[in-house]
Length: 228
Image (cartoon, rainbow, N blue to C red; front, side):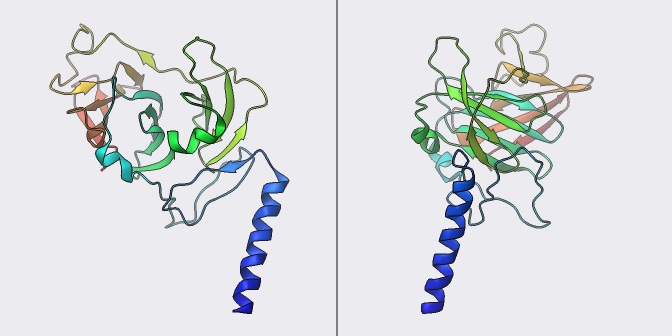
């Protein structure tokens, strides 16, 4: 028992020392994550082969989409970042899994009642502020996707990714030919080489949210179920 107590105390002191070295950095992890990774820089990080960071999405099963579709913030050939009543999540299309989540519950302690979120052009950093409806886009924190560390922002970002806003699906002469109008569809898209990415759901249940890659040439879809 004494050996266990000594080991526990040593680990506690080590973690405390790490936090003291960078008091502004906080690691956001899901409830199922037993191996949080704490880093304070923006260096790329790759998990050891065979490992993955668990993200708690257990509350999604009973979650409604809300008054509007989740908003697409960023997409490339590997990941999609989106915001909705779940907070902000990152979905890895290569592994078909949610890898990151910043929930409203987690962000309460940062005095951010409404999340304003944007993503850097390189898709590595999520900038977060309070959406006070005043059109003043002021970001107070930055979250590194590769490490799950959130820090105070020392200066406002100048180069943010911006999805394309289209006319409301169902009333869109240019894009309605690509949509299955039996689905709810978001009005944000990200154009790739010969395709575009958008979000849709067959109903107002968040568990049915999908990412769709639609080919311009033939309208063929590749579909990812975000929370299944």
